[in-house]
Length: 591
Image (tube, rainbow, N blue to C red):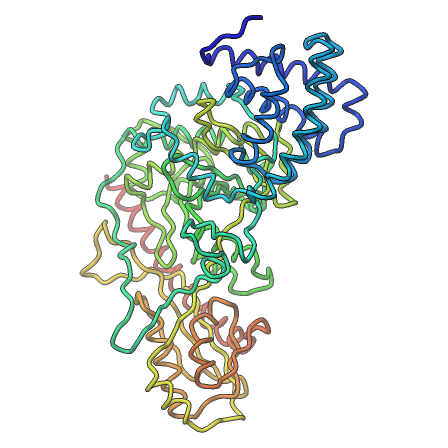
């Protein structure tokens, strides 16, 4: 076969088809059976990727492979350009050895050339591993994202959504390309490794213990973003059409039948700096749906929810801290008048319980709200890719129980989306801590007498009661979910102080409560907190004035007192919701 001096996509595709066929045939031979479990699992991808590199860099098909090209690919290309863990490199030599011998036996590569390649493989593989060690080439997630996002073949200004709903339905039936290899499995960075955020600092000095300075002085409070102010651009009918079409595809797939809430699918959308994570709802409950977590901080809150004790009486309240976009399948009476109007304008029909799709934006500290245009676009992309990823779960051996995820990302080289089973990529740790730097105030409080007989409990939880200033009651400003802040005396089992606040700066209320108590009763011996979130508001303050905070032993007194109060509050909220529903029903009947 003559060698062409020009790269051809068609030629490359044909080579990969041939190599896949030969690899599958090789699996039946004795040499393959002697390989390790990891090598067997990744056999076809290693051979296919090597063949692709040999053609991409040297325009050589398997019949034309040379020892010089092989040496170049393994020692110059792999260590510096291949995004993979060290374990991937270690299986390259045994896999290629078995594969080359198979090509020799099948006379695809003549005997002399095959032997030359095998001899060179023994030389090049150890050198590849040495160079890998020198370059420390276990790439982080941010490097992978950068490599994908900055590729010249990807137009970051264009959307990756599928504009034609009919086309999307057709794509769901196709068997798109997938590779079940962990070559993109990304390890969590070590303390002294470069931080994944890309700032150039060591991980231990950057995102490993990221602290947010929430409180500088009494006069200077940090500014907060107006995240509750919605874009006033509503989704277009075209966007709604795509959303309902994607929801229909997901309902047909029913991923909650083969996934549970803790199984995550990771999607890397071109143009976004952070991955999005997809989780199902409904494997253990009646309601079904999909949650989309857009980035590291949102998935961190999801993990916090997962780590909470099932016995925690306030577990549902922790769910109010979530930030995600949701596609939910409920009953007709769960829809708002706006939801029903959209369905009516699109001439859609739904019947039965759990069959009515609707979409919401969840944001930490704010009441679930309708989507704006930007959120709709992100949810469209996420749901379409999630549906496509689900169609590959039966082909990819994703071990969710052992911290694996299905990673879906766009390959500019192949001009297609790929789906791979990989270890869950590292997620930067976010430590939220209120830092008090008003030295004069701290000095005065430290001089207060010690009350060794007083042990307190402190907690702050979200209450599912929407709050909104009547003057702000517009479609652009979403209602807030307030914090209920509590300070309790453990000995007397009494509330010392509490407040309900929807402020953007609840730390002011927290400090005011603590300072007032200390000025009246002195410094307590200790303060129990429910979890790290509550502790983050008082730990620094208490350390600086000599008060111990106790985390992990619960807040039994608060649990006892608050449970009764919570029941009363929820009863009031339910009565208000019931009244609102009755008014809506009367309005519909009138219409």
